[in-house]
Amino acid sequence: MNVLLNVNGIEVIYNHVILVLKGVSLQVPEGRIVALMGGNGAGKTTTLRAVSNLLAGERGAVTKGSIELRGERIERLSTSEMVERGVVQVMEGRHCFAHLTVEENLMTGAYTRKDGKAAIQQTLDKVYAYFPRLKVRRTSQAAYTSGGEQQMCAIGRALMCNPRMVLLDEPSMGLAPMVISQIFKIIAEINSQGTTVLLVEQNAQQALSRSDRAYILETGEVTRAGNAQELLADDSIRAAYLGVA
Image 1: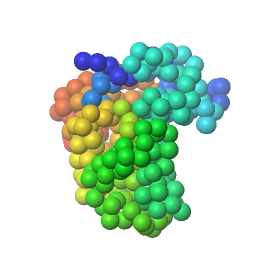
Image 2 (image 1 turned 135 degrees about the horizontal axis):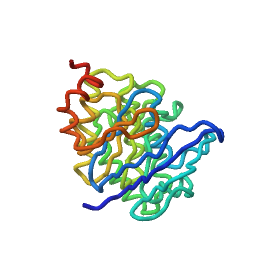
Image 3 (image 1 turned 60 degrees about the vertical axis):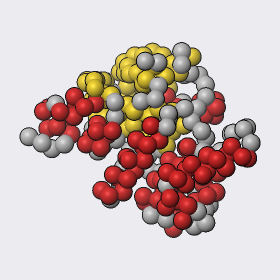
Image 4 (image 1 turned 30 degrees about the horizontal axis):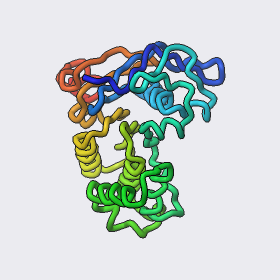
């Protein structure tokens, strides 16, 4: 099994003094879904930001350890260089461009591509196949679409980059249960087409049932790791994350 992403003992500090991650290690095999779980403030989003090199915008930095993508050290690459290498993050809270239409939002994801209009159109057609609702709303301003439609748009925009790996940060946040199920079904379908997924998610049932492997973070450290289905069946995990005594 090829390891696409290898995070090895990273330490992350904000503002030169606030230690957030304390020796976090994880691996993401190529073509798999890996879930990263934990309570609020556990360091999940910080881990994603370390991988996609978005820490500098919040005065954070990886101060120890290493992050490798297909064997290449990537800690000092820019975010745009990460996108060029096929790593794209979908931020928590969706962050669509409110004044642009749905299709214009999607097309911003293809900005860095150099493989021609035909290839980009092919990807757009694929995104509309994943999210038929977006095709219906393609001329609507993003500001006037629902939360679920905006989440679909944010994921679709990431797919327009033609990524090797997508980092998803809380894709179910604020969505109705029916929409959450739909989103996770599409995430599984995207993965089945060859896109690797590193997923941060509070909805443990959905995350673990769709993932191959999972890591649990507590106060900046990995406390559990293993097969997602085995963790889903674990009584202590069920009690902590599913409310099952």
